[in-house]
Length: 296
Image (cartoon, rainbow, N blue to C red; front, top):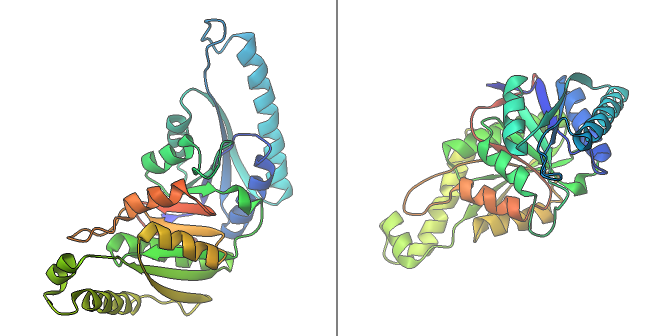
């Protein structure tokens, strides 16, 4: 199991950082985790000079170190345990992934980006989700330091989504949040449904019924007794239904596995995660492997 004892918060040290610090501190306190702070300064050409010893960088470095110290003080005021303060220069996504390895982080937390819009988080956040082996939490601006009260976990009944659901349950237990479990029956053509079910008459309805039965079997092995929860079955395009249910349930956080099931009907949570990320309605945790041990 993955432990949730070391968090790496990759902060842009911008106006959104203060609110994000409250969310990070809340997680750290509830899970008794240390927070390591990392800020990456990108190298930019400045009068054809690329040296970090240039006065341009020296000034920016001094400002960034001061803001990192202020962030540490804010976290400590919120009763969070703070580990290393790191300031790096270079490729942002690569250095965040490397920094997480350096401090043995169990989870990376990163803002959605300064340029968050209807097109989704910035490129850096999406790249980190792709590259990092550990869970990555993309902090949506709408969270604004509020505690997480509602978690949505989409599943496709695969082993990967089983791990995602286990993580969502553990997080809901630790945070005291309500969990909505969502399964989406894909819209399939008659031929695909007939191939999958072996039925010729009412093939699509039979496919839907078998999916619902598979959901029942999947959930029969899951213990949700310790948390407030609901199980939702919808039909349609996976990412569209995830976004719709997230809005309906007022989700603060979506927890998803990063890959999914295969077969004639491919409901790949890898590609679905990327599509949800592009239209992200709230914060998201993408999990590739293992189960978080929250210590609860």
